[in-house]
Amino acid sequence: MLVTGSVDIEADGSVSAYEADEPGRLPPAVVQLLGSAVPNWRFQPIEIEGRPARVQTRASILVHAHKAPDDGYLLSIARASFGSSDDADMPTAKRLTPPRYPSDLVRAGVGGTVYLMVKVARDGSVADAMVEQVNLRTVAKDSAMQRMRDQFAESALAGTRRWTFNPPVEPDASPYWVVRVPVHFVAPDASVPKYGDWSAYVPGPRALAPWAGVEDMDAPDTLVPGGVYRAGKQGPELLTPLGSPGS
Image 1 (cartoon, one colour):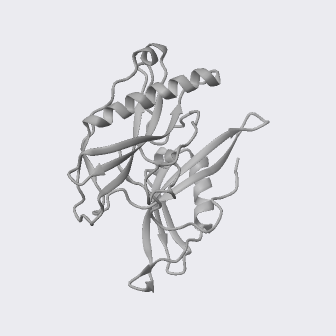
Image 2 (cartoon, rainbow, N blue to C red):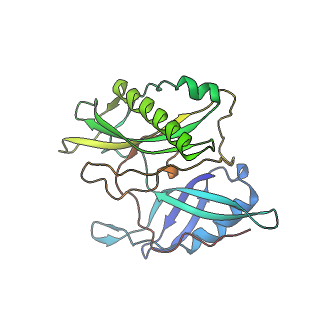
């Protein structure tokens, strides 16, 4: 389950407040887990104009549920990313035409998510693209799942040829910008997970981008669907563990 919200960080890096988006749509156990873990986080203090400052950051938190021996579930915070996806110095989506859904995967009811990294040229066109990771919503033999990932990846990459972006409102001198875009393939008979729903998937292997400046990145599955995200590490740096498992 991907939970979004905001975290208030004090000048010393401690957390003074945390608020999940739409907590009424979240299971009580998830609300309890985050409410007990997030206040204990500590971040690298953030300086503004050379002085430690109090800031608020957006947070995207991935919660995992693992089957317990007693038929219950153990919840844990698997990953988290911080920062905004609407910075003025990064490109925004202009036209992201959905890619073609591979016909045999449609017939088989196979769904998945392709996490793309896109090199955006100064004029907003796509100069290059690569697949960072492909997660599947189907379990099969390893060889079969690899074929499914390859088909989704090929279709998603082909789709980027028709994409265009708006250059940043505050452009810098970079020859290009790199953004990350999740592409979701939802099988015809499947429902799109809503905020607060659990979603099962099989993570695929993760590839590294060949372009400079994007080596240190948050996990792809903390990216909220429908967004365009800066490639490379962004947002405050968390210094403490995410939290201990809870039942």
